Image (cartoon, rainbow, N blue to C red; front, side, top):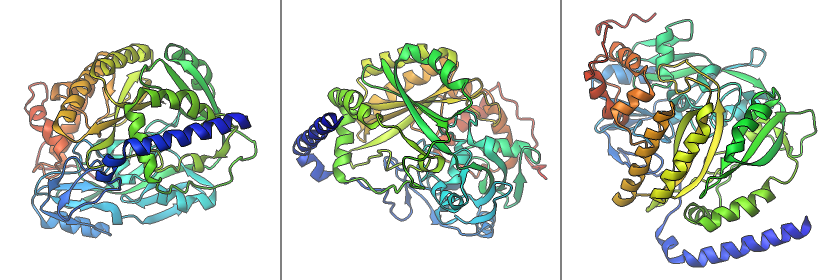
Length: 500
């Protein structure tokens, strides 16, 4: 094993040296950094779609939000940390509510395992509060630098096998509607508002507060196995889905052939921890890691290097860690890069379990024909979920999360739009859905096919927001066509909310 590690280290050094020389001049032009926002010009994390706003405000209290909405009559947009990529956080000449300072813990009940927070708080901040009490977040995204409000607005999910999407861990929310009124919403009270605002992409109002369920911070043991893609479904059903000890699960589908994958599962265990850290440190990576990630996204040789040498080394040792440690990775720690010329972007598709192989065949064909620069595909499982007016998992599904490199020039955008449109069509033909808070190039007809309950959402929006104040570029793309559809009958009176 010592010889193998030595060979790996020598090869890694060689790759780094060659990579640095190869990209020296281009790297002088690129600035790999976190998001920099100019005043009154808002952007999402890729910095590909800047939008001029009328004003920008960073509230710190609920009353400030109420007063701002009540005192204005124009368009309102809302954002946490600017990570939604599909236009959900921006609209020209709007009042832009930046919720990043709206981040307080309001209540924390260790006995009931509940925490109530303002919606601008990041998952990492919650973890810092609850970890000393050996408690863990029940459901969250794979990375902890998103805000709670943003995660609720997209009804996000992570690698949790049994718990599904975030909506399943929310006891209640508070939301400010366009008339400045504040309502409590839960599965029992104002339930339509609850199921519409969670997963509503900011189209109904401002979620200002959430009460979330917590669980024990247990020890987890990692197991991993390499499989061909056509073996995976049966293996998952027999070894993951029916194993109650499995808490987290994800598989890596390797480019460029997409013929094999690495299954990575985390099971409950009584074994001693092999890593006693409580939470990830999540320090910024050195500049050369961004260069390597760019090369890996574009090079089939680097893909093979990752699959056949790097990952066997990384996944070789026995690992037992706390649940909090494994769920506290940041987006940057997971390999996000962004430059003036290109950015790492994600898309996601939910495909019924029994259509797994068909969809893999389709995406392999699409990526091959378009020569797409796919970095990797992460596969996780979601149980059937009818909760939420825009719920994506109407059956047991596998989530295909695509991570790819996209140039910021028009030609690169057209290339991505071409293969994305084909993937959306392939997912719908597989009775699946495309997840909306990404750079998805879909038509309104495709949205309606993928989300047949979208008419109910627009009924709620007309009821809660009759003046159509809560806009963003995403909803504007589809709103008029959906409202005008002869298939949708708006039966809700527009002059009264009727909420309690």
